[in-house]
Each structure stands twice: as structure tokens, then as C-alpha cells.
Image (cartoon, rainbow, N blue to C red; front, side, top):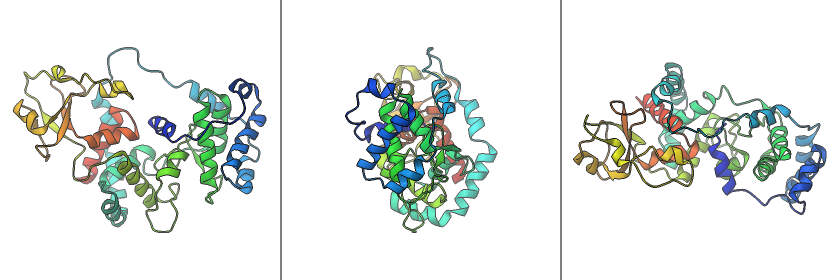
Length: 340
């Protein structure tokens, strides 16, 4: 599950359940609480037939609660696992070849999507590969049951109640309950969108009038492109390029002093922003095509003497999908391999 999307979902969250104090909700059994969810969805326009089929036989899934409570917490040390082993596992020959096959299969659609959204096809395919192995692993949890369970459990009630109602609105578009399966935390389809993200950004990539991210690769790619455009992808710029650093250059002296409001540990590892020209004047040499006037940050995750990159604002867009340097770097590097 891509937990960064929880933060995205918070921004789009609807009003919390009305007229019932939190403590009273906590004391409700699952069936009684489900009636509150149903009432809210009904008030927001979901049809009775959809509510009936999406709640038939619904009961708590205690495995979902167990998985949620066993999530690892924030690291307590200042150290970070090395990036190189992660890249070796996630940008391997199987994922590269799978990405090249997917790119070839959807090449015509990708060209059209690139023209419409301005996001390179290899980036879209790389996201698809990381999220679901190009559609092979999309998750098997009944989303209605999983999200209702998480809302009832209460640790993040407002978020999951809103996502359950959003799922009902997705189902109201004609998708069956058997199609609406995904991760235990509610992400679904080829790009692993939360229901609220689907309602906001899912796109029709094959021209059939539906944004079927569960079954259509073309729709999945268009939806990822729409997500990236919405997050501020700048057409014509790379996500980053490898950089040569002189042996006597002190990267740590250029670390940013800005504390990011979200995912601070991710951003604290980046340098201040300078233009490529300014980095060149300090001895940093980009190893790929990149404009001298672009503002970029220097990133050397595994310490002195190891690989380094100059990262553009488009790298930050990848972080919007999943706020992890490991994820964003592996997406960028996989995209480079797919595009070669």
C-alpha cells in the first residue's frame, strides 16, 4: 500500500460522520456503525441498489486490523538503509523486461497520453510496474469490507469512513463488488489509487467512456499521467541525472536547512536547490542531458564515494505518489531502463 496517498486523501476528505459523538461511535458494534456509513453514503447520493450489493453479508475483517496495527513506526535512529541494495531488488531484469514489453504493447496509447498530459510514457510504465507488477499483483481484499473495518476500528476513522463512501460512489458507476478488490488499506486497480483519488483523477485512456483502472492498462496509464500532471509534472524536464562529484567535495555542507512539513526525513537528505550551472561551477558534473538553468538538488544517498544524482522538481512529483526516496529513485531508474 502506498501510504503517501493517505495524505492526499486527507485533502479531499468529505465531512466526518454527522451527529454522532466519537465516543458513541467507538461503543457501537460493527453492524450499527455500518448503518451510519450507509446513511452517509445515501445522503451523498449513492443508490440503494449499490449500497445493498456492496454491504450484503458484510462483517469485520480482523486480519485488516492486525495488518494495520503491525505497521512499522518511524525510524528512531538517524541512519538510513543503503539505497543500492533496494535498487538492485526493484530495478532488476524481470521488471525492466516487463516494463519494455508493456511499453511496446501500449506504445500507440502511450504516445497519445504523452501528448495529452505531458508525462513520459516510461515514467507511467515504471509506476505501474512498481505498484502492481504491470497488473499481476493488485490485491485480493474485499474493499468494502476492508474499509468499513478500518473505519469501525477507529484509529483513522475519518479517513477510512470517507474512503468507504468514496468506494460506494465508485461502485455506483457500475463496477461489481468482485472487481473492487485491492490492498487491505483500500488502494486498488493497476495504479493502486484510493477511492477518493479515483474519483478525482481516474481517466479514460482507451476512449470507451470509462476510467476502468481495474481492468484496462490504457486507463491505468492515463490515470497515472493525470495524477502526475495534477501534482505538477513539468514537461520536457528529466526527473534527474547521475552526477559526478569531486573527491574533495563536501556534500553535507550543502544540505537544506528547510524542514519539510510532510515526509521530513525524505527531504532532509537533499541539498539546497541550485541551478545546474551553479553546481557545475562547484565542480559537480551532470552525466546526462539537462538544462543549465534548471533548479536541482544534489542527492548522494549512500555517502561519499558512491553514486549521486541531480534531481529536478519532477522527482518531487514522483514523491507525491509515494513519499520515499527508495521508491522515487527506483521509479526514475526503472523508467530510464525502460526508455533505453
